[in-house]
Amino acid sequence: MDVIQQLHQFSAATLHEALGRTGNLPSAIKPIYPGIKLCGPAYTVQTMPRDNVLLHRAYAYAKPGDVIVANCSGFYEAGYWGDLMSLGAKTKGIAGLVIDGCVRDADDIEAIGFPVFSRGLCIRGTTNFGEGTLNEPIIIGECLIHPGDIIVGDRDGVVVVPQKRIEEAIEKATAREAREEAVRVQLRRGKTSIQIYGWDEKFGY
Image 1: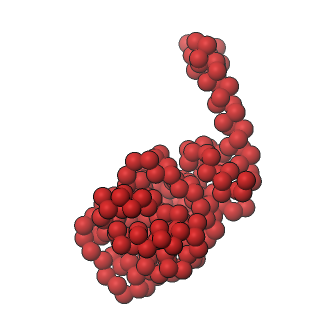
Image 2: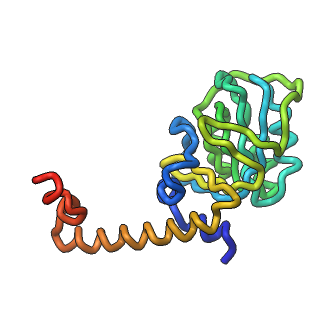
């Protein structure tokens, strides 16, 4: 099992905790329809406000399995991505899109089955000047994202696993899940969480 498959087994929240509560993208970035999960290497994009030419280039140049991750320079009132781009990206084998901005054509994107995480939906169109960068480091929120970092997204949100911390993330996430399963066993036996964690004695509950 390769590292992508291993990381795909964990939730975004579990990996965020495993990384010492780092790597989370802004909580406003969420899946645009239910049941989406994605995991793959980042192909990073920096667009200019309201311009989406580089997003067209990104899905053309990215490799199958990549996740396109885009910073839109803080301008959210535009639909940077739509159904035609989703169809093109899915046909190329792109794993999904994470965008710090808005998209449109949500119903058609859902019908296509292409995973998209965005700040929301916006019907406003874009320009096509084409300025920005491709596959260079970007910042979204407080997170620095390098090309090739692993992006994991689910209903709760999106986390970035740096390449140099992949093995650490897998090891710590595995250990965390084992600890949580042990807690579940005790909960099913009738213990409360404050008893399990020793908070009843520590805090005098």
